[in-house]
Amino acid sequence: MGKLLKLTYYHNSGFSVQVGGTLLIFDYWEGEGRILPPAYRLTCSYLQAFEKIFVFVSHGHADHFDPIIYDWYKAGLPVQYIVAGDMPVGTRGSRLNPLQEKQLTKDISVKAFDSTDLGVSFLVSIYGINVFHAGDLNLWHWRAESTLKEIEEAENAYYAAVAPLREERIDVAMFPLDPRQGSMYDAGADHFIMTEKPRVFIPMHWQERTEVAVEYARRTRNNQTEVIAMTKAGTIANLSFEGDMVDIHIIDPPNEIEDLTRRKGRRTVDESDPFAETDLPVQF
Picture 1 (cartoon, rainbow, N blue to C red):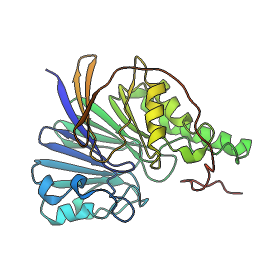
Picture 2 (cartoon, rainbow, N blue to C red):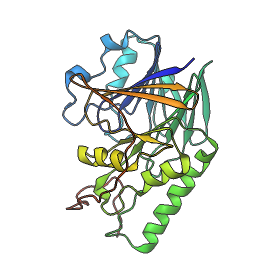
Picture 3 (cartoon, rainbow, N blue to C red):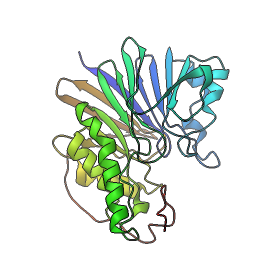
Picture 4 (cartoon, rainbow, N blue to C red):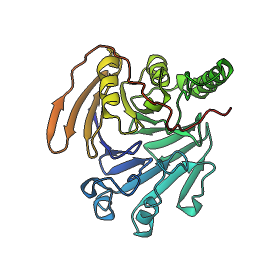
């Protein structure tokens, strides 16, 4: 019998994954100034429908960690928090450092992996399906302004961080694709797809440049990995896994439905002023 995941996109790197009465929430953030439309926010009234809720926070950057998530615990909802090892969580959950694991229920477990920025990345196994959220794990480099030594150090740090993932099967991956890096901004994502071969890959952290996510999906999807561009708050991807087959049904609000087909192509990104902001600025 196949397994159905309902994956919902919110903002930046924020997603939820629903399997039956269980909800996984990753790096939820309603945006600067609460720009996430109210219709697509996670509210206590909505969350009451779930038997179990697991909230994952990869690190403490404001665009990955919204303190509103702790209101859900205060409201008496069945919430458990799993956060990076350097973040406070008290008795409400667990902290994980890279390569630490935790059994959450009989059918759900989580293992933390390293990051090339703050915190960790998470691999969650839920009823036999492996879901990976990278947090800020990426090949952070700025080739137009970095020295060769800095580029080499960034590459080595990234390769070391992802090396342990070679031992894991990844069915769904959410991974950064940040155009502010300029030239070869997609090097980390490309490497991840080529080496880890996730069955479904979803770009995130694309800095509200929706065209970047859409074009990356168009030119990168292949026979081993389907790439989905989820660019609107409230977009839902229903993923049905059965054996080697994955059926994908995308629902874009308001009720725009697309059935995915595999396509190929390539394009270069517009690199005008790509260094206005960075997650890991180069130090001179």
